[in-house]
Every structure is written in C-alpha cells, then in structure tokens.
Amino acid sequence: MAEPVERPTDGPVTRWRVWKDRMSPVPGNGSDDRRFVAGSAVLGLVVAAVAVLAAGPWDTGQRKAEHDRVVAEERTGGVRHVPDPAGPRPAPSAPAVLTALGERSGRTAPVAAGTLDAVLTPLLGAPGLGDVSAASVVDTATGTQVYAHGATTPMTPASTVKIAGAVAALSALGPDHRIPTTVQVSKDARTLTLVGGGDPTLDGAALRALAAGTARALGDSATGKVRLTYDTSRYSGPALHPISPNENIAPVSALMVDEGRLDGSDHGPAPRTADPAREAARAFAEQLGKAGVAVRSDATSGRAGKGATTVATHLSEPLSALVERALTNSDNDIAEALVRQTALKAGEPASFAGARRAVTARLKALGVPVAGAALVDGSGLNRQDKVTAQLLTSLLTLAAHPDHPELRPVLTGLPVAGFSGTLGERYAATSRGTGLVRAKTGTLTGVNTLAGTAVDPQGRLLAFAFLTSGTTSPGEAEASLDALATALTRGGR
Image (cartoon, rainbow, N blue to C red):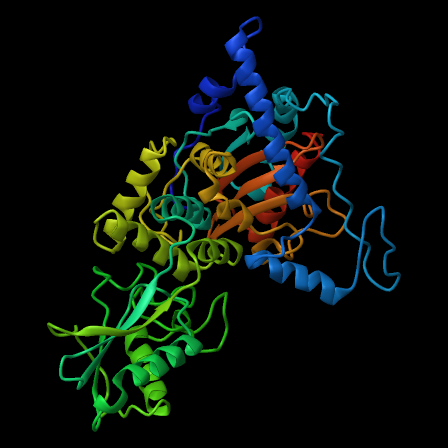
C-alpha cells in the first residue's frame, strides 16, 4: 500500500530569486543590458557544456567506461556515420546546439511555458504514475522555472535524494577530497591498528598496499607476531539502515572492503557481510602475512594507544569520482558515506541523525529551497525522506551554474539515457531522449521518480524533477517518466 502523501496543488510558475536578481534584463537600462550580456555569456558556457554532453560520454572518470563500451560495440550512428547493417538502428544524432560566432540564434528567449504545460500536464496524468505527482522544470541558463505542478509539495524521493547528498558533500569538502584509511603502530611495535576513515570502496589492492607499506615501516622492529586491532570510531550511531538486513546496502561502517559485498560484484544488489569491519580486518591480516608480518590472533575492535604513529595510508578516489559512481549506479553505500563525510566536516556525529543535520544546513547555506525537506538518509531507501521537485531542480540548476564548478560531478554522474547506469536499458535507440536525457532514477514500492537534465531543440539545458507516489507497476511508471523527460527534448511537442 502506498504511503499517505498530501495531494499537491498546481502552483504558479515562479523564478528562482538568485537567478532573477542576476540575470533578468530590463530594456533601456544600461547596467541591466550588461547583465543580459553576462547572462548570454553564461548561456554560452552552458551550451558549450551541453555540446560535449550531447556529443557523447566523456573520456574521464565514469564517462570513460561509456566510451569503452561504444568502442567495444563498434557501432556508430547519426548523420555522418555508416551504420552496421547487422546491428540495431543507430541512435539519432543530437541536434546542433552551437551557432556560428556573431549569429543571434534567439536561444536566450525563454522556453515556451505554455507549450510545456499543454504537453506535460496530460503526461503527468498517465495511469502508470499513480495518484499523486509533482513536477518542476527549470531553464538552467536563466534559472526560470518554466513548468510547475505541485512543485513545492514534499514527496518521497527514493534514490533521487542522492542528488542532495552529492551537492552537500561536494560543497562542503570539494571535488578533490579523498577519504583516508590508515595503519597505526604502537610505540612498542607490537600492535597494529587498521583505522577506517569511511571509504566504502576500499578493496583488496588497497589492503595489499597498506600491508606492504606497514611491513616496510616496521622493518627489523617486527620481532615475533603482532596484535591487530581495527578502529571504526569515526562513525557513530546505528550501523543498520532501517530497511536492513537488505541486499541493497551493507551495515554502515567506517571500515569495509568492497562495500561488504560477498559475490565480487561492484554495483547493484548483492549478499552482504553482517560485520564489514571484522571482514576487512581479517582480509588485512591475510595481506600482512603475505607481506611478512605475522599476526598472532584474530583481529579485535579497538583504538590505537597513546603514542601510536601512522605508518601507512591509503586514499580513496577523489570525491568527484565517488559522486559520479554513486549517481551512475545508484550506489547506496557510497551515498551514505558521502553524507557522513559531510557530517564530519560540519563537526556533527557521522550518523544518520548527524548527516541529516549537516546536509540540511549545507543546502540551506547554498540558498536552495529546503522548506518541507526531510533528509533522513543519504541513499533514499528510507520512506521518511521528503523533498520537493523544486528543491531537486534548484540543486541541478546550481550544479550547472558557472560559479559552482565544484558541483559539476553531480551532472556528469547522472546516468545517460540509453547508455549508462540505471538508464542504460530504459531508452530505445530510436527514442528522442536517448543521449539527450541524463537523470537520477528512484524506485521504492509504490514510488517512482526521475530527476536530471534534458537538452531541448534550441540547445537549452533544462533541469527537471518528476516525483510520483501510489504507482502499482514499476515498468509502466518508468515508461511514463521517460516519456515526460523525452517530451522536454522535443521542446514540449
């Protein structure tokens, strides 16, 4: 049964005040003309970014995997390529989004809100979308909300809440931040402590490097077997998510290897260990033995004693890469780690409660509308999470703003329709939305959501959020949400 959600009401189309003050030209006013020119420059940057996005996956970070996939398939499409007759029909080429220098394309004109209303409102009424829905569409170049339907009504976001956690983490820590895992040795060199920093992507290769570094540091001082302890004190509060035990998320721990997965997978549901930290310590002890450091007994939980020194350190991938992976694959373990890193930066406990306070405060400081929001976890698995469609589009618009390059991984991490992540299989090759829609998906029983960006026929980048509740068929709901996003690429036609 679907949870009770207050039915949204249609609200007037509004303008995000930060962009309004900075971007709206007033005829006859010289200073405002300069704002208009500046706004055009901003649009140019956004359009240039769109050209890169529309042209295909980037050859960096998560985008490299998409490039490799295209090369492996050896199939090309579009106007200037020869399709493989033995393969499926190629995806349509993206429309041109750049004009010659000096030409005035009129792309600074506002999106036709009336046209969007005529197309999107009926699509929101599709039976597959359940009995409650909300929507927001924003022109990222101007910050103008060009479509709104219950946009300020709090709804259950499911995994689209990961956008909020990603923005908060990048804003608080920066895209270059790396999460450390360290090894400390006691003053008498008889006790080693593996200290978890909260990196859920720690893997076997990292443990081997830590063990080798530890062995080098100990040298001849390692006489006989050493005692091994492991420290998870960086995190606090309950380790189990309210839905646990569950194959979608491991117990939340500051120390884990491969997200606690037991089947060798790197994304999606998987059997998980009940004690990620103990398993990580056991694996580390094995690597220590291979490096020539004998451990005398099973590892125990504990903190390093006074006077202990750090002898080996492993740093995670940059936060930008973690954000991309969390959004592309809808990775719940990384999402929970991101909000806890935000909590630590804010001086809050790295717990569900501390992360909620830290993320909410960070978003409020960024000036986005957090009224009605309840960010009770980072993964979106908790039905108590609430956000508005307006909040999600505000976050996406902020990530597209030239003043916030640190937030760009939020956009580059969004799955590409028909190509990657959770949208890899949801758009046909002939769909207008393929390659032009990038969006975070969200799915819980009775809840289906979609939030991201779409390129319209004029080359504008539109941020959108569609939230629904009371759905009865995930397949029908996803198809209806995809149709809404695709309509944006047609300019509301």
